[in-house]
Image (tube, rainbow, N blue to C red; front, side, top):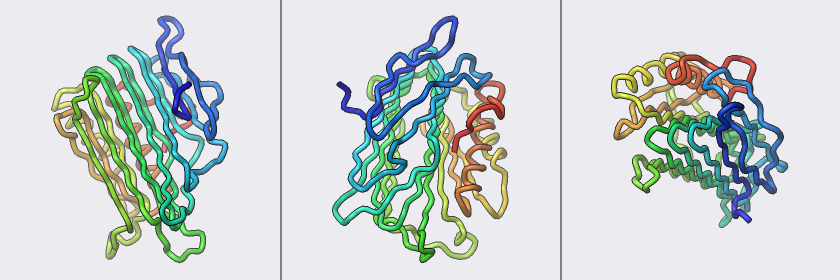
Amino acid sequence: MSDAQLDLCFKRHPDHGTYLDRRVFRWPFTLSRGFRLDRVPAGKLTLILQTVSGAIQADDSLLQRIRVCNGAAAFVTTQGATAVYRAPVGICATDTVELEVEDGGVIEYLPEPRILFPQSCLAQRLLLRVALSGVAMLSEAFLLHDPAGQGRAFRRYSSELVIERPGGDVVLRERIELDVMPQRGGRRAPYGAHGMLLVVAPRPPAELEALCSGMAAGVGSGIETYAAASTLPREIGVGLRVVAIDGQHLRRALRAACCAAREHLFGGDPGSGRKTAV
């Protein structure tokens, strides 16, 4: 039996497109059927992860494994934003996601944002093992929420992102560790929602620059959001960071960047008939 609470494997059928070859889950996750909502890439399967608890509790230790095999295409998201509740001193919730994309595989792993309640403590880790011809689009986002309106923040938030090739060669590693939110003032003061979107794709440098410009242009500019995009180390893809005044504007900005990336990578956006990410 898998040690993960969620263990999925997507494979490609030559006539019917992507299907779930392995579908193992237990508390707190639950799954319904997949959906075929996208025009591009052809045969993509959409899966919406759901949690019975609806939140991340103080003593949760979560592990998800998702594998996309040769030629398969999957879009994985969540049913809604996930609350992270208060944790007693000395206790920290952990959330680990391990993604594997084989040659010719495509994954869009775009969960909804995390809502960090006062005194919450969360350590999350995302590992992407992607083949040279694999494509991955990943998002990560969080925002602060104090029900009492007193501006109280989380106790600790840490995040690690690792991207490596199948042989174990690490091509990108990023860590964020926050005990408190940095002080904001002036024009930065309203920004309380934070997110990033990474696109890992085998493209020539000129195409990556075009993708970078397209994602930034998709988000646009305004007083509600601020975003910047750049190519990733070793030219493995493009990364975009965005801050916003609230979750609604954050999700809107990330969604616009996703649409721009899909246009560039697949020659079209899936359209409005699907549950959009973030």
